[in-house]
Length: 364
Image 1 (cartoon, rainbow, N blue to C red):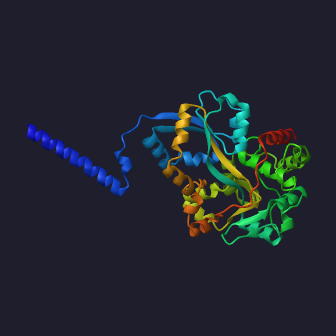
Image 2: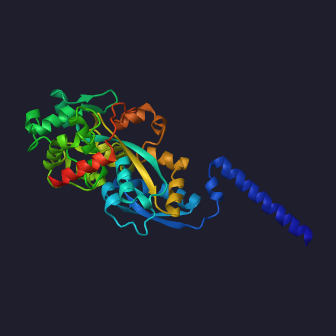
Image 3: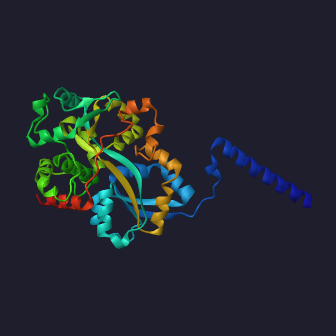
């Protein structure tokens, strides 16, 4: 009996060792991890990050390695940090330092650990026919990488001058405009408002003394848009679905085109020759903060630093994470029309200036 028991133990140990070796050699080490007791972490998330959190690979890593299930609700970045009841909320995941600073002013005593998790520049989404027409009129330039650049100040001059699409030889109804989300509800709209304030202040960072001077023109740019969407994700989907006539140029995040190409390659192949990605000069970085309100929120924040999650965030969802942009080869960047290095960047005005500007926009 003792010899049989010893032989059984030796066999069991051999099986375990073999399993460890096989898992290590095949890169399947996660198979050896014991299931963790999971906790549900609840919070509000900017619409542009829904695809990332819904990613099955991301969910599996969070569940298997960290014992986390994320219960998220889409919300506008400005709304979540200033208007929402945060009772029983573990985290907020807005999309800019401005939203983070507004949160600190509104909920200073509730502020917990917070970090910048992702970065994405504000860009313009258009159509090749539109971009080519603007290029002929000296407002846009196609670059070797397949993307376009444009002097945003010159584009805004056309908006404020009341130019029409037909002035550029385009069969599009109405006035020339750049469609944005509501700056008082969505971060992409807020960042666009920051860019407008800077440009109208002479391409310098707009301060508190500049805001009263430029607010009327900034408000006018938004006022020309009528009803605005409250989510950048919704606006991007509308841009793709309704096409050039309804959405000639819209404000968005760079990551949205990468995520779209990865999530729906068949549709991407159909439209890739039609869509145009324009990098405004200057632009601003949208910095995606995760604000941890509870211990569970801090667990999620720590888990998002996982190297595999960071890789998935860039390769599948387009969020820049440190040096992630350098992990994609030139052919992939050109196929997507993505700029490797963003140099024409201006800082966002401070939170007090932005809050003042947003109130003025809302009141006009």
